[in-house]
Amino acid sequence: MAVDPVRAQYETYPYPARDPKDEAKRLITGSPSHLRELTHWLFAGRLPQDRPFRLLVAGGGSGDALTMLAQQTADAGIDADIHYVDLSEATRKIAEARIAARGLTGRVTFRTGSLLDAAEWGPFDYIDCCGVLHHLPVPQDGFRALAAALAPLGGMGVMVYGETGRTGVYETQAALRLLARDDEPPAKRVALAKRYLNALPASNRLVRNPLVRDHKTGGDAGLYDLLLHSTDRAYTVPQLEAEIAAAGLRTVTYIDPARYAPETYTREQDLRNRAAALAAGDRAALAEAMAGNMPVHIAYLTRADRAEDTVARIAPDAVPVFRDAETEAEFRAMPPGAPSLPVSIDGLDLALPLPRDAKTILDRIDGTSSLEQIRQDLPAAPDWDRFHKSFTQLFAALNGFSQLFLTR
Image (cartoon, rainbow, N blue to C red):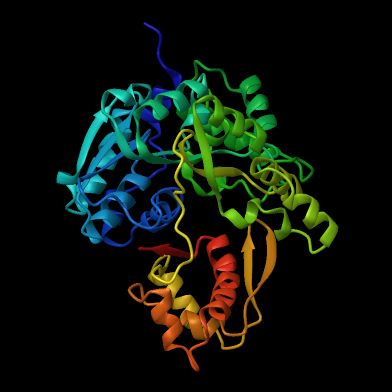
């Protein structure tokens, strides 16, 4: 019987490498699937209230997204029915131990198996699939399987590798296939890969790429996953959009949305005007080409036939919320009158313009006050049109880099 090389890899090197004891010290969060983020983009600021919220973590690995979703839904008092599936028993056991360490075992159903069977357990209101689809022999099979498991009014968060930011990875994979035989023990292949990396000259494209770090920071599991994986592909935005459309899905947004907006990278008005006239997918493709620094693509998706707007919008009754307590503390410490928000991401330094009253507004965001209540509490209580203009500029900067969301 043939051995599945992907399953065998993760039995030997569960990924990412995690120690359940660390749950006592920290909660790992990120995108996709941060609860406030997905609620903003996929559920117009409020999750369904009439039934348990059904979630699937598809190809859940050692449990980063699972643990985040289980803890955040518990903290928010959400009645959640969470399901996890992964090919690897060794990896699943780590995820189970992390959930147990947080006292959340009763919130999760665990399976060892394939995400291609997801429709058997659905439908789901939300599906997380982070770092998995690009490891399938036929990624479209995975996109279609998850689409079939999605509830009509549900949404999905996915992450796949981005081509422009993974310079040097695939040349290194090809070189190691020449040197490291498939039948050699995994530990021997890792040791050989380390010697190969140490021998590379400064001119090598992987050596010169600061955006790819898993072989340096992810331990043996990270090195194997990056450079010795048997099945691995990366996407440009047009290629990813084609996969999404072929599965009967549509893109709601990429994360961070400002990174996929061409105007983020140029102040030249004619270029901005030409970019503004493009379709959403073409705008994202143009931004990808301009930035040149996207090692992954994170996207929120819905079924293509879901007609209603899923995004929370600026309105008097909308409640702004910071991403988390750390983000809130950072903006509380921002000096009054700061003209811009400095952003540094994947080697790109930006200064996003802010309205003059940004600090005054930010100080009144408490997670419960609506925009109308914040407006009334401002000095001299500006009229709604004036406040809306200021908040829209502020929100574009902070939401564009996933620091501020809206709830209802």
